[in-house]
Length: 143
Image (cartoon, rainbow, N blue to C red; front, side, top):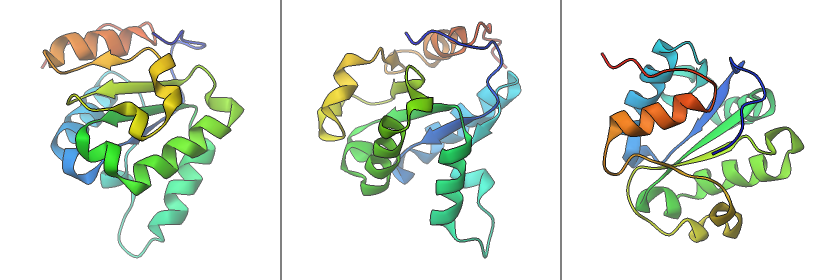
């Protein structure tokens, strides 16, 4: 599991496939409820904005990168672009967190993902949230 460099992150970027939107909605809401600011395209991009510019600005600003892994994500061109940006930016070193929502082959996105500690949500959301929030020294409080 990545080691937290500060207890409360300034902002985390949530990368996901649009097909995983229901899970990403729950993930963003739960993190925000626990005091973790999340940049999430579904809630941070409003009409008439240049969405690709907004994604780029958020990637340049955020300090953590959460990657929701699923078969749909492993095929997504935009998820791959976002991940490549994070892998190339030294600011994200040790701050990329792959989250397994559904079993898939993460090597389809990047061979480097196999060397990163993953957070597993496949069997239990509660255990997944507990492990994820522990990265920042936070405890999980279910609703």
